[in-house]
Image 1 (cartoon, helix red, strand yellow):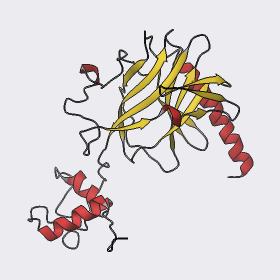
Image 2 (image 1 turned 60 degrees about the vertical axis):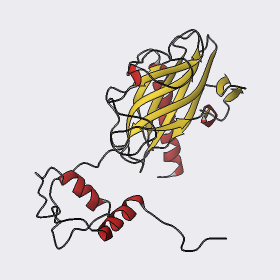
Image 3 (image 1 turned 120 degrees about the horizontal axis):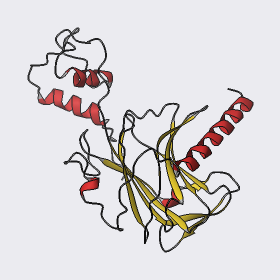
Length: 266
């Protein structure tokens, strides 16, 4: 792609992104829950599938990725954003009134919940958009306005249709906050609650002894696709064979990508 065509694509994406941000306050695509007081998050609205908890591994528990208020930058180079100390908030002092920050998630992540710490005493004066940015397009995955609050606090948004299978190649996830003139507004941290997922099962089986109807087919194929196993022989996996400690070491080392120096630097 030439520099001219890429510049044109960036301009189109910027225009589309700005439209998404300022339409969010008027027409929310994801309903928001009640605002919460500052402190640990809890209560029924934020209990995900009962057993979910933050900062854990697996496909049934949520991890939390936090975007600090100071990760946000002005959408344009001429935008002016200031910090509000001693609290971790930022606000726009001039420009397009739009702040933007990158979001880095693992491949295949599923977003369940977004928590947004903000101050909006008038209500609906800010909007948050989770967008998928490519060279030629920007897609809104979730958008919602801020809620009216008597004090700064958290707004919680449970995604009705989670964004399944985050794809990082050729894509950028961006979180944008737009402010509307007319009321004092501040934005703080944004928490993205997400869980990992197993890659979809292929249409055909790799092993003759693990057909597509096998209850473990998807999981065994995921091990094959990630290079953790090659089976126990040509086109066979031996699914009912016992696992030795030797084989366990191979599986775990490959799955975790264990890489340690053979000698200490001191």
